[in-house]
Image (cartoon, rainbow, N blue to C red; front, side, top):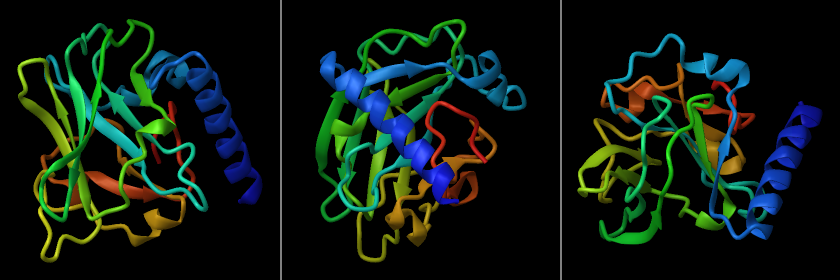
Length: 193
């Protein structure tokens, strides 16, 4: 509904405004129920995955985000999130991460100034040693360079303000087409549909 969409948009805008005014490019977001959103996923000991991506909002791209989910206490010091261009496979943006997933929270929310391309493109999460921990490619990759896992997540409606989200939270079969669904109402910092 428009009211729900407006409420989500307002919440994202408020979080973005607060973080940008503090000079941050990311912020920890408390998951409802202290992380209960991931109670039925079974991540590996150090698994952190790209859990939800809003890469194209209606109108301007203010308020776009990438949400990571993983075990509390996981350090992301030295990690990076890379935007990979589907046209040539080159990295067009690198965001340095620092800190750890707090013991009382499970979601890490990257905020709006990341401005990811609308696709076909990919996002890669790398640890401090440069090892790719997770990757998601979105849109149709016919004749393009796919840097995700398995097959791309193709949800054309995501170009109209919907996000792509793992369902259930944290599920990682190593195939983006299986793991991600379109979420008409983005859920930054909350359980995915």
